[in-house]
Structure formats: structure tokens, C-alpha cells
Amino acid sequence: MEMNGSDSAKTPPQNGSSRSSKGGLRTMPFIIANEALEKIASYGLIPNMILYLITVYHFSAADATTILFVWGAISNFMPIFGAFLSDSYFGRFLVISIATLTTLLVSIL
Image (tube, rainbow, N blue to C red):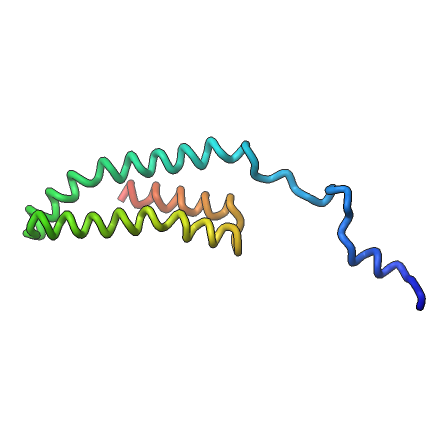
């Protein structure tokens, strides 16, 4: 059996030099600020949305509350879905950037 240089090219270096320094505590302030501002926006939207659903769409108060409950449940579940996409496919910075820009664009519209 002959040992050649191709076997050493297949094994990753053990000293950690190829590991990137992404993430960690550097990203936490941005994530916390993003989530906090999103919660503030959603809690500020609830009273206005109930009034809008009652006056413009003529929903009952119970129906308007149910719609907002479902909207809140979906909004609270989406970070889990985003974490799955981030960890599995895209990377945390791309997913956070897309989510932040989407939230900003929806808030502006």
C-alpha cells in the first residue's frame, strides 16, 4: 500500500486555522435589537389593527381578535423557521439581513 499526498489533502487541518471567526457574542446585540424592535412594532400594531378590522372590514371584536391571535402565533413561530433555514442552508447573517430588510420594507409600506 502506497501513501501519497492526496490522503493528507482530504483531512482537514486539526489546529483550527480553517475555522472562521463568525458569530459569537459579536452578533448578539444585533439579534437582540432586531427582535426587540420587531416586538415593539407588533405590539404597537395590535390596537390599530383591531380597530381597522372592526371599522373597515366590519369584523366582530371576537373575529378581529382571533385573526390577530393567529397572526401573533405565526409571527412568534417564524424565528424557529428562520433558525432552521439559517443553520441548514443560508447562514445566520444572510437570514438576519433578509428578515431585517423585509421587516423594514413592510413597515414602510
